[in-house]
Length: 88
Image 1 (cartoon, helix red, strand yellow):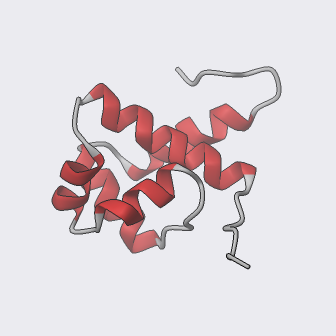
Image 2 (image 1 turned 60 degrees about the vertical axis):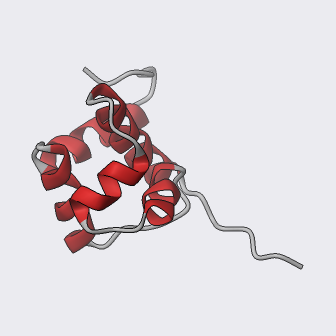
């Protein structure tokens, strides 16, 4: 029986914040992974909320996206607020 990754609301929100920023810059998961020094499948797992990135990897992703780590976290937190569907 295959192992199904756990997906918490917080991880899904963080992944969505990263995906939105990546898409706004019109770069692929592969390009983001290259810029951050991470594998594209790992980036995809983070974006889907299946992977829990370490603080170090979160810093790498933020640098690769040219955004403050705190901004990614604010965007993710805004998605989790009741009645709020879109950050910013």
